[in-house]
Length: 150
Image (cartoon, rainbow, N blue to C red; front, side, top):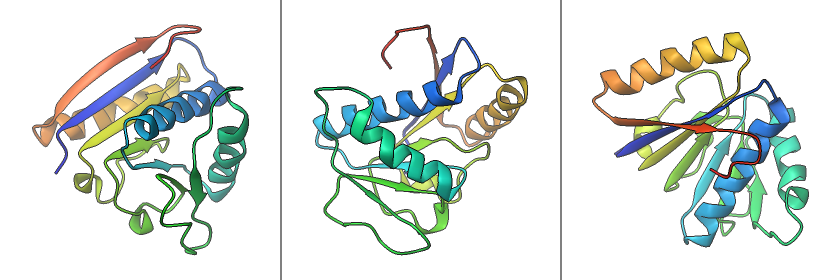
C-alpha cells in the first residue's frame, strides 16, 4: 500500500534533467537497500534511462535491469527499468516518468513523480497530484533548482 507520494518539480523544461533526477533517486534507493522501478513512457525512454544509469555520475554504480518487450530483467537487480506498468516487478519505490497515474500504483510504498516546467507536463502532473490526494495519500512537493539533489 502506498504511504507517500513525492513530486520533484524542476524549475525549467528539461527532459534529460528529469531522467538524471530519476537516476539519482534510483541510486538513493539502492544505497538504502530498497528495490526501485523506474517507469518510462516508452521502451525507448527506458533504454535511454538504462544508458544514463551507467554515466549520470562518475563514481556511481547502480545495478539495474531493463524489462523490454515483456522479457524479465535480472530479478536480482535492485533497480528495474520498464515502460510497462502492468508487468513492472514489485519494489519499494516507483519512480514515475509517465504522464499518467501508473496502473497498480498501490503496490508501491513510495512513489516519486518528476515534473519539469513544460506546461503540458505540469498540467498532467496536477491531475496526478489530485488523483493521489483523492486516494487520501500523503503528497509532498519538492522544488528542485539547478544543481539541487533530490
